[in-house]
Length: 106
Image 1 (cartoon, rainbow, N blue to C red):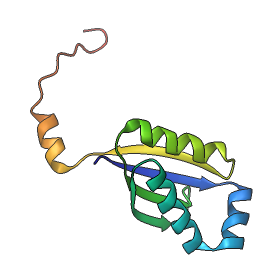
Image 2 (image 1 turned 90 degrees about the vertical axis):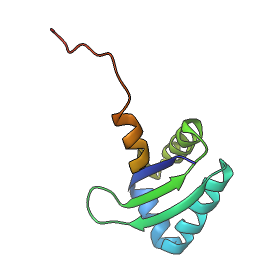
Image 3 (image 1 turned 180 degrees about the horizontal axis):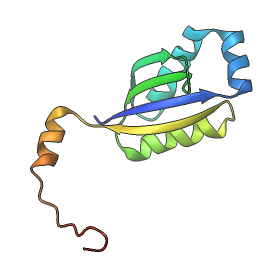
Image 4 (image 1 turned 180 degrees about the vertical axis):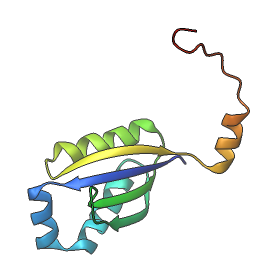
């Protein structure tokens, strides 16, 4: 199953929710959210800096990832960025794939 990295910045309402419900409550809620689109939450971390929450989620496809990102962002409690993750084996395959490309101006 493809893996996706979700980086999230909490809004004021999101921070208030974490203060009220706690961190483990958010992890449990996001496990349920991932399951609702056919996925599983592999890892969940709170972070300091630009991102407040980092998730790695196994999801069936890009549509499920988009649905998860759109619906969580639409809540107004978070701003989500999504990164598709690939395995070293997938990188090996990509490095052997021939691509026809012409750089701009060439």
